Image (cartoon, rainbow, N blue to C red; front, side):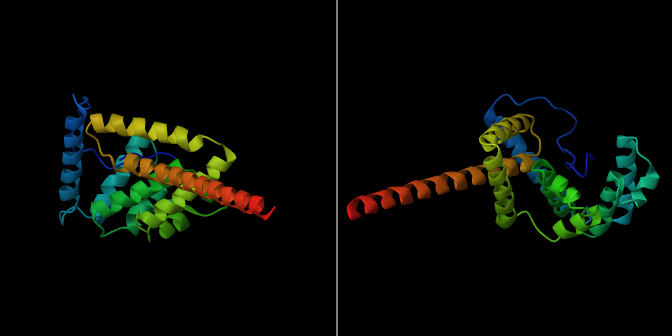
Length: 219
């Protein structure tokens, strides 16, 4: 598993180590669907749950992949420690449930929420404990879309730019037959934010037209 910044991890790709691109979009979609199905079946097996043994193995892999120190696992202020704490907090859950939680944190890292939380002096334990209670549903997507609407007000055009990047990334991972969930969620959140802005503009424009007509008639 990948450990980056606070927690930007992806589930292992069960398609294998080969990264060759598919020859067509249809083939890419079939491959991506197979990966999703295999991961779902594999991760829902009773043996595929977060256990003490799995935690020890995963932390060791994380340490070796980041040239870290095993002692950091006991310090939640470090990335390794946060990863260890997250695993401990989800002991007994299926890999599929844990994978979804990791995607949530990838999204929070992507949209800048983790950085904002660090600036408010929230500890990593508090952040993990808080978001571990929630699933990646419409409510969470709406909250993240609102974050991007705020960014759009500060930097006009940023949503369209990010959406283009997300679509390009989605196409690339689809061709490679990799997991699509994180990239599809990015696209969904940005599209939701963009549609909300468009809807508000249409409503405002319509309201302005009605007021103009009303005032004209009044005069």
